[in-house]
Amino acid sequence: MKIEIYEAEWVDEHQQFSLAELADLSGMPEAELCQLVDYATLAPIDSDTAEARFGAECLVTARKAQRLRNDFDLDTSGLALALSLLERVHELEKRLQSLGAQFPKIHR
Image 1 (tube, rainbow, N blue to C red):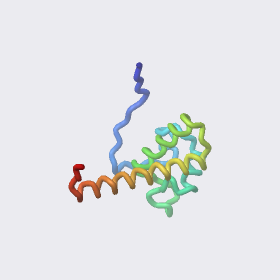
Image 2: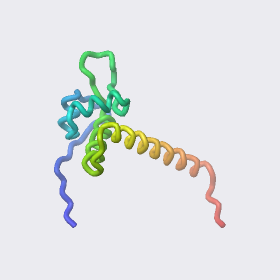
Image 3: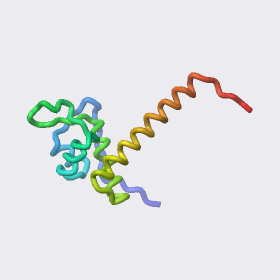
Image 4: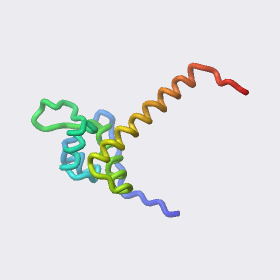
């Protein structure tokens, strides 16, 4: 098995990106990123400014969207749905983990 790393970039959680930078770093076209914003999958930091700025978490989401689009040939609405479901699963896993920490394990 051969593992290839195409590009790696260290991102600070406080870093902000323009739409063009987000498109460049994620590999997603700007038009599709705009559609993900319309679907509320990506949210600009301040929607009242002239040029939208996005946080580091949006870069993670955009890269995930790019992989999903390539792997499963999803359109933008499918990406939005898949990403929202993945986020929901992640939230539920965190809640389950939190509940597991509150109660001792029962051995049967």
